[in-house]
Length: 578
Ligand SMILES: [Zn+2]
Image (cartoon, rainbow, N blue to C red; front, side, top):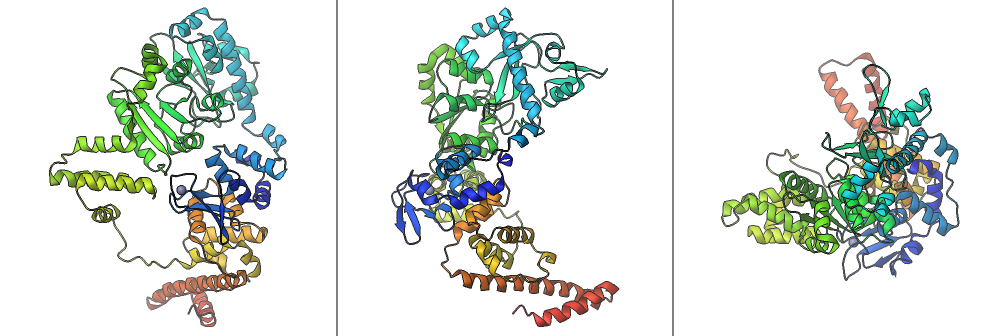
C-alpha cells in the first residue's frame, strides 16, 4: 500500500507537520514543560497521562500504552487507512501526495485488479440474465437494492462461461489464472473456477475487487467456495463487508463479526449494516487491527454449535493481545442450529437487536468458560483456574483493562492482588529462565536509544572503524539507524519510526522512544554516543580475544587466527573498554 507513496515524501511530511497542531485540533492539549498533556483519547481517565512531544514527533500514553507518530494518531483516532492518513496530513501541509501513477499502472498486480473488476461486471450481468438465480436470491429474502449494493452476481454452469467472455489470448489467460478465476485442466487447457454459484465480490479497503466467494444454489458440494490466495488476496487480512460497512456510515460505532457472506448481506438487507465476515479462516491479529481501526467495539456472533463455540474461544484468545483500554469485545452465542441470517429473517431488526443485548463481554465469557472447566469451590479447583487464566491474562497489554481483569481473577481464586500478580508474573517452572539477567541495557541498545531519540548526534559523531564487523545482538538495526541518520541528519525520531512501519522492529523502537525522557544537551549526547560505540568495538574485541585465547591454549589456532590474535592484542591495549 505504502509502497507507492515515496518514503522521501513521508519523511518530508513528518518533518513539516506539527504534531501538536494536528492532535491539538482533536484533543485539548495543555503545555507541560517541553511536552503537551491531555486526558487520553484512547482510554477513560481523569488525570492526564497522554503526552505529546513535538521534538520527537511522538505521542505516548502512560496509562494504556498507546503511542506512535502523527500518522499513527490519524490511523487510530480518525480511524483512517494508511494512504488516507497520508492524504490528510498532506492536505494540512498544503502538499499533494506524489502518487506514482506510472508505477501503479505498471505494478505487477495492476492487470489482476483490472481483470477482477471486469469479471465482477460479467457476473453481475449474468445474474440479470438468469431468472432462476434471481428467484433464489428473492427466496432468501434479499431486495434488489441489497443485491446491487454488494454487487452480487452469478456464475452460470458450463466450464468456460467466463473464459469465453475474454479474448482467447495467452496473456489474458495468464492474468485470469493469477486472479484465481480459472484453473488448469490435467489434460491441458483451463476451466472456470466458479460455476453455478451466486457470486459475492470481496472488496478491499479501497473498494477494489480482490477476490470472489461463491455459494451453490442447490445441494452440491462444497457449499461455499472462495478464490484462492493470490497476489492481491490474503484471507488472513481481508474481511467481507468491511468496505460496505464503512461506506454505509460516517462513523462505524460497532462491528459485528459473523461467519458467512450470506449473514452479512442478510443483515444489511434488514438494515444491520455493520456486519463483516472472515473468509473461511479464524479471526487473525491482522483482522482485529483493521477492525479496531474502524471502530472500538467488536461483537463476535457465532452459531451455538460446537464449531461455533470453538471459533469463539479462538477469537477470544486472539482478541486478548488487542485489548487496549477503550476497546470492547463481546460475544453473542446463538441457539444451536440458528445463524444470523435465519435469526434476522424470523425476528427482524428489532428481534436481532434484542438478541444482541444478551451478548457476553470478553471477561464474562472468559470467566464463564474457565469456571465450566474447574470447580472453584475447592482450593485445588481455584488453583487450576488461576493456572488456566495465567497464560491468557499475560496476553493482555498493560493498562487499566488488564488491571481490572486481574482484580476480578484475584476475587475468584481468593488470592490477594499482590500474590496473584506474582503468580501471574512468574513463568511456569518448566520454562527455562537464565539464572541472572542484568538490568543494565546492552551497549548496542544504549546506542540505538541515543540515535533514535537524537538522530542528529550521528552527524556530530566520529564513527569508530570496524563497527560493521561487530557480531552482537541488535547490530544490524544499529547500523541501519546510523545509515538513516547519516543520510538524513535532520530526520525526527518520528521520521525514523515511519521507516520501520509494519516491520517487526517497530514496536521495540516505539517502546524505546516512549521510555526516553532525558533532557540532555545534544553535544553531550554526541560524546555519549562516541563513547558507547567505542565500547561496543572494545567489548567485541575482548570477546573475540577470549575465543582465540582458548584456542591458543589448545594450540588449535590457524595462521590467519594467529595474525588476528596479534592485531587484536594491540588494538585492545590502545582502546581499553574500561
Ligand atoms: Zn491511554
